[in-house]
Structures are given as C-alpha cells and as structure tokens.
Length: 127
Image 1 (cartoon, rainbow, N blue to C red):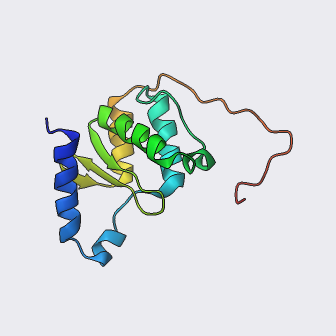
Image 2: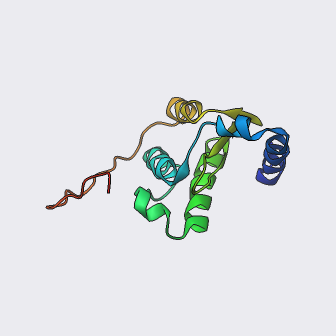
C-alpha cells in the first residue's frame, strides 16, 4: 500500500496536468463538506471528534489533518481545502465525494450516534 506522501505526489502530479475547467469539476468540498465528512467519519469510529462547520475554520490545519487521517483509515486519500473543493482518491484514482461516502458506509459499520444539544434560541442555518 502506498504511503500518504506517495499518494499526495501522485495527486499533485495529476492536478498539475489538469486545466482550470477540469479542476472546477472535481467533486468535494470546502469547510462545510469537511464538517459533514467529520460527522460521517466519527459515526464510523474513524475519527475521535466531529466538528460543526463553524468549528472547522479555527485551527484549519490541525482539524483538516484529523479529517484527512480519518479518511486514510478508510483507505481514501483526501486533500481537504478550506475554500475550494476537497479531492478524494481511492487506490490512486480520483473519486467523487459521494463515492467516498459510499465506500465508508459499505465498509465501516456505524458505531456512534451524534446527539446535538437543542438551542433554546436557534440561529437560522443560513447565518
């Protein structure tokens, strides 16, 4: 199995060969989707903590590395990006975010449930 550094080199080489139009079509995504990814990975026991999207922005480097490590436990190389699409790879081949999620759901049983506190004065999601 290739190391993370070897996979990242392959990914970077492939990205360098892609045009801006091709890159814009890559599935993935931003702090919001990275937060959602953390929930999926947490429920499957692949990370020890999940994050709200608003938490992802602070300490981006540390938190995104945690999420990338969780994906790696599932056999997926993920390159998280705070303001652009994330990239997902399985066995060196780029896959969509949906394919990455389906891989985790098919191979890792849900072992944890996220219970959120209900705020007495909820702030609408769009804020």
